[in-house]
Amino acid sequence: MGESGEEGDAMRSSVAERRIELVEWERTAVLEERITPEHIRLLRKEFRSVVRVERDPLEDGCWFLTSLGYVGSIPLGDDLLLHLHPKTPVGNIFRMIEYAYRIDFKIFDTLYHCETLPGMVDALALILAERTLHRVRRGLYRAYIPRTARLEALRGRLDVERFIRSDWQPDLPCTFGEQTVENEENQIICWTLHLLLRSSHLSQRVRPTIRKAWRALSRSVSCFPCSSSICVGRTYNRLNSDYEMLHTICRFFLDTLVPAHRTGEHPSFSFLIDMNLLFERFVAEWLRGRGELHEAGLHITTQERALVGEGASVAFIFDILVKDRESGETHCVIDTKYKVPVKPANDDIFQVVAYATQQWCRQAVLIYPEPLVSPIDISIGDLRIKSLTFPISGEESEEIEVGGRRFLRELLRLVGD
Image 1 (cartoon, rainbow, N blue to C red):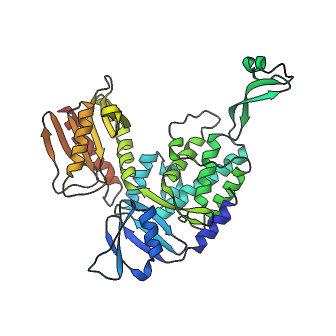
Image 2 (cartoon, one colour):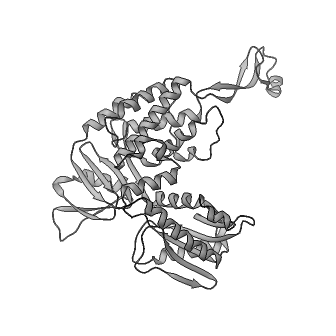
Image 3 (tube, rainbow, N blue to C red):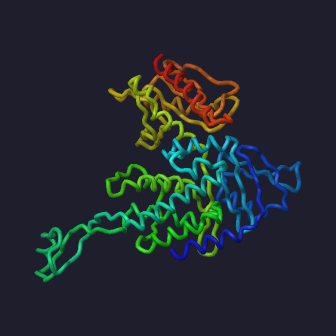
């Protein structure tokens, strides 16, 4: 992969101090002299789902940019940085990340005292690097990887069928397990560190430690591209139990580091939190930990899929399903919507009605992060559709818990009707 650290530092140092600041969902005017046609082309080609780019014929000499529910930064070429700020208080975003990724900020002093999003990203990256270095010093986890080879002496199991077909060659076809540090557990961490060194979001303060960890790991572990999904559903044992937290942090970064543009042969990476996805995961994980659901004989599932239509040509993916613990029957379909319209859009209502119909349940809920001016509580035949709020905009992070409990009471009342 080359010297990721030096490449990342060169890329970062080449980015000028010119910045454009956007707040999610706010339309911002940007003068033409601040943003070039090449920057506009890059935004429209690579980031059209992240930033809306518009022209107003009545406003000559400027572009209008709108952040579409993302938080973070995008390097536009080597001379401009686009900062996307949240409307939600930063402390509440931390709280959402804690739940969504199951990271307990309180056990890390550097995280617990963070007051800015860049500070939190630096702290998480530093924890990953320092814990990786500690594990390298202790010895990396070794896993048994199945191998086949022809050997002079028997090792593991003899492949009898191949042996019979081999015209009595003197070497033996063997199948055996080899203990090696070249395994997914280590490769996930190596790839994440590599991406971090190519990100423009990290401060110079933490980069030397990340580079040191990457170099120490890459001496014996290969860097293979991987996605965040590889971090989910893994099993751990007494020999690699500490990897669970490392992979949790890796999952967060693999979700948020996005290729931005190319510097020479190597792409740089933006840091982008998809607030739609974060809100969905936060609500799901917050609900999953509620004892009230268990007491009501309920549990939730997330991201279930159902194929419908002729030839199973359409896939439904349900954000959250509330189910009976014993029978598995679906009581309620929940769809999260990270936006604050005056009232639910017709398309969103039609979508959740289709989901509930497929699941043969009588309740469907649309969840929003702020109260709507015109919430809905309507019935279509036996199906009841209601909009609820899980508020995340309070100035104090404790307000999330208070609002969450209020939301849960309404949800249980709806399911119980």
